Amino acid sequence: MAKFDSEEVDLLDLLASFLAALKRNLIFTIGLPLIGVLIALAVSYKSRDLFESALLIETSLLSENECKFIFNQLNKVGTIPGLSDNERNQVAWFRFELLKGTAANIATDPKEESLYMEVTARVYDKEVFPSLQKAVVQIINENPSVVRHRLERERFYGEMIRKIEREIGSMEKVKAVSDNNVANYVNPAELYAGSVELYREKVLFEIRREQIKSVQLIKGFDSLTIDAKLSKVVVAIIGFSIGFACLCIFLFVRFFIRYFTAYETKH
Image (cartoon, rainbow, N blue to C red; front, side, top):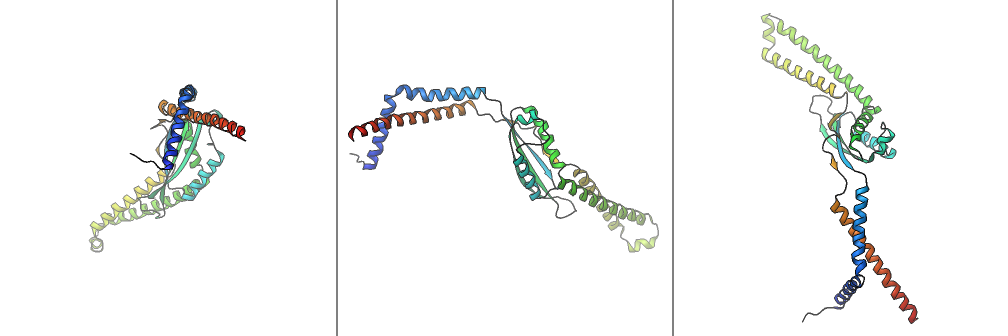
């Protein structure tokens, strides 16, 4: 025959009392959770649609601390400058996240490093995503730090391109010389290889100079938009849980009132 210690007996008595209370108040036991489900579903049907999407921006024109400062300022403002009042009302919330990148694969400043900025937003109307994307990109593009770094980098790339063009011009002149004495001092194979390498560096600098004219949009809001509104099943579970919690509170209050009444009678 199984034996139970006092704690197990107390727990079993408590569980039995709770089940008995549910049985005695069967109307409330069924009604309150059901009402919770119905109210939650009604609120869900009447609530506005909610959509979530994220954009990813890459740039080497900002340092990590500068990115964090921009994000902190926007969080303090609580909105995205550049949107109309109606568009601001369509934005439920937004979140910024900084992702570190790797040094750019180019023979330039070794300190140059790409940073990835992820902006996640939830909106009530998907039509506001293009305006929101344009505003975010514009804020970063017109930031004073970005403008300053862009001018410095354009100057650097421009000087390097001009220097490489002069070197290439000198090589072309050497290759055009037909004097055999020159061939004794210059290896034609090395000369052609050096010329090709200079062309390669020049093209890379030109590509990079074009890239820094604006921050690079890796992914925009217009793709991979998800419905952020809770599903009806989840809403029903939440409503049931709230209704059941109200039922427990109701039963506890009734029990406490009876207990307090009996206590006053004895004393």
